[in-house]
Length: 95
Length: 481
Image (tube, rainbow over all chains, first blue to last red; front, top):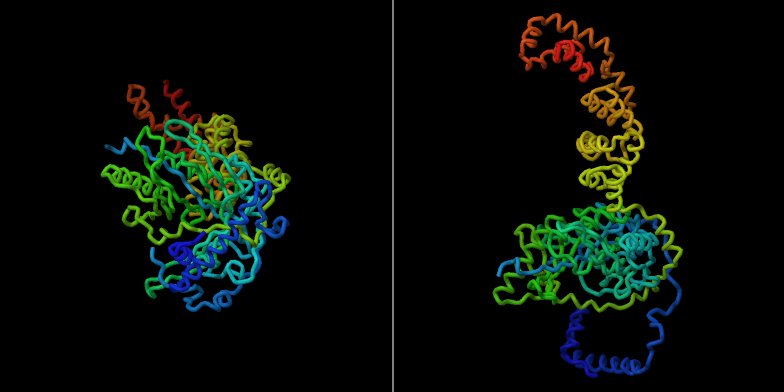
C-alpha cells in the first residue's frame, strides 16, 4: 500500500511537523513500508485472541485520594520561555 | 415552511468535575480559585518520564454515577490517548476512555408537559480535564493556568432522545441533581464544574433519518443552553428552507450577540488518533467493589420526591422545593419526627427558614444551623397550643437561628407567651367594655364594623399578649353575638 503525499501532509500537520518536499517523499515510502508490514500481520486470524495493547497483564495500581505537595510555581514555570506572574504566557489563542 | 414542520433532535454531552480531593493521576489538589499553577506537579505539567497513577475515588465515583443512572458497569475498561495540540494541554494528549468506557447504557427520567420521558444514556467515562487559558488583552498574549489540568471528569453522553430545548434543560437539571445528590459533583456551572456540549440537528416531521448535526460548545448556564439550542434549531430550519446545507462543525454560543458562530480552530481537530494509553493498564473492576459502592448509594432525587408526596402528604410543589438539596430534605425529615403537621412544617421551611437562610447571605446553611430539629418541633408545638402567636414564633425562630437558644428560653426571656387563661382575659374584656359603654351601645345597635376596635383595646391593655382566638371569642360572647 502506497501512502499519498496528501496523506503524509495530513499526518504531518496533525503532528505539527513541517516537512520539506524531499522529506514528504521519503516518509511516504517509509510509512508505506510500515503499513505493508502491519498488513502482513493482519493476514493472521486472531479473532479468538485477546488484543495485547499492554505489555504487562497487571491490573491498575490505584492510589488513595489524598493530596501531596505540588511544585512551587516558580519551579513548575522554570522552563517556560515566557511567563506572566505564575502563568505560562503563550501566543494569543484566537477563538 | 414554518419551524413547526421540523423535528429538532438533541443529544447532550456533560462534563462533570468529580469532587475528589486530589487530581486523577497525581496528588495535586483540585481546589478551585488557587493562584495560577499553584496546584501543579511534574505529572500534570506533562514533564517527560513521569507516570500517571489512578485515583481510586475517581473509579468509585464513576461506578456510583453509573449505578445511579442504571448503567452496566464494565468489568474491564481501557484508557486511551486523545491526541491534539492546544496550549492548555501540556502532554499534547488527553488521557480518556474511548472504545471501552467504564459505564454503558443507562437512562434518566425527566418531566415534560406530555408526562414522564426516559432519556437513554449511551456511556459514561472518566478522563482528565485540561488547563485554563485566559486572553490578556494588555499584553496580546494568552495566559495558561494548569491547576485544572488533571482534575477528574465524568463525561456523560446521552442518546439523541431529546426533542426540544426545554427537554434538554430538564435533562441537565435532573442530571445535575443526581450528581449533586451522589456527592460526585458540586453542580456549579459558573465555575465550570458542570459543563455541557449539545449536538443539535433537525429533520422534517415524519422523517426517520436524522439531519446533519452541529456541536455546540462552551455553554455555561441553563438559560444559555436553552437560547443556544433554540437559536441553532431556527438557523438549521432557515438554512434548509432556503435550499442550503448544514455543515458538520463545532459552534460556540456568543452570549454577547446571542448567536452561535463557527469555531474554525476546531475544524481540523476531529482527527484525534486515539490509541490505548501505554502508561496505564486496562482497569479491572471486581464485583466486590461494585457491591460496596451499590450499598452506599443514597436515595435519589426523583424517588425521594415521590416519597415526600406519599409519606408526608405534601403537594408536588412543596416536595420539589424540599428535595432540591439533600441536606434540606434530610433536615426536613429530622424535623418531621418532632412535628406531625407536615404541611405546616413545610410552610415554615419555605417561609421563615428560607428567608433567614437567604438573609444570612450564605453564611449559614442547612448543615450549619444552630438549632436542632427537636427545637423547631417545640416551637411549632408552642404555636399549635396557643402558647405564642404565629407572629411571635417568627421572632423566636429568628432568635433560635442567631443564637441557638431553646425556644422555651426565648419565649420566657422576651415575655412572648400569650395569655390563654380565660379568667385573666375575661377580666380585661370586662374592663374594656365598661370603659367604652358608648361604643358598646353603637355596636349592639348594629355598627358591627367597630368590633376590631374592641379587639385592639383588649390587646393594647394586654400588651399584645392576649390569645387572639380567646379574645375574639370572649368579646363576641360579652357583646351578645
